[in-house]
Amino acid sequence: MARPEEKAQAMLNKWVKMRDENDPTSALARNAARRQKRPFLASHCEHLADAEHFRRQIIRECSEGVKKIQNAGLGEHAIRDLNDGINKLIREKWHWNRRIKELGGKKDYNREERKAQIAAGGGGEDSFSQLATGLSLKGSGGYRYFGAAKDLPGVKELFARHAAKITKRKRGDIYKYITPDYYGLRDKEDGVILELEEKMARENRRVVEECREEYGELKTFKRRR
Image 1 (cartoon, rainbow, N blue to C red):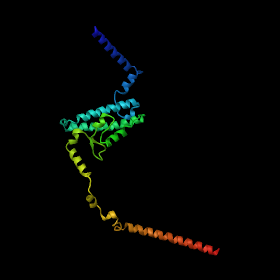
Image 2: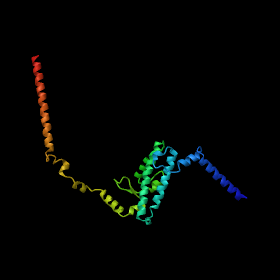
Image 3: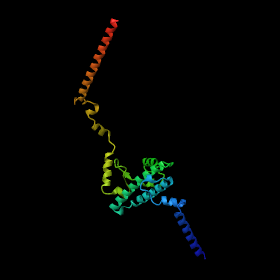
Image 4: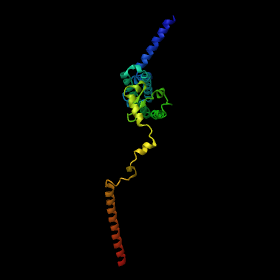
């Protein structure tokens, strides 16, 4: 006897849910309609709760992508596509973070995430902050490499060359590139400074002569009086 009652209750629950979703005045229907699909642009979202929901959705997608890309057996093309997708989601998340702030959100997620990155990826407010510790190059527009993407052909060499450039220089290397130009010993060789000095000297002599003439006229005027 319990089985028919359970079926009837399940059918009733399904009918109530369909009724609420089809009723435009229902809060459940409004939330379902708004959150059915993430807007292409964050600026199209007008509700703070929805923006928070879509941000969490992006974080889940990023976390899943970072977990998948750890598998080096996926193949080069799949890894590159995954890495591109993760970077696209990170850029999208930045826009949603900004939109949340514009809608009156109390947290500035972009600022918090920058602090977490400065602290070497630790201490983020969500689980993705600990996963999104990809390597990036200066001048690459913030593009990062995650998981197996760090070992792709060409990527390792790229980071090796970058590391060689930022290697700390020794004191002897610094002195090696100091020339007489550093001390200003060759400033007059091209003649530009000499020409400027001569021009300024002529201007100064002209001003002094004018002052002398004015002083002489003033002195003559006082004598006549």
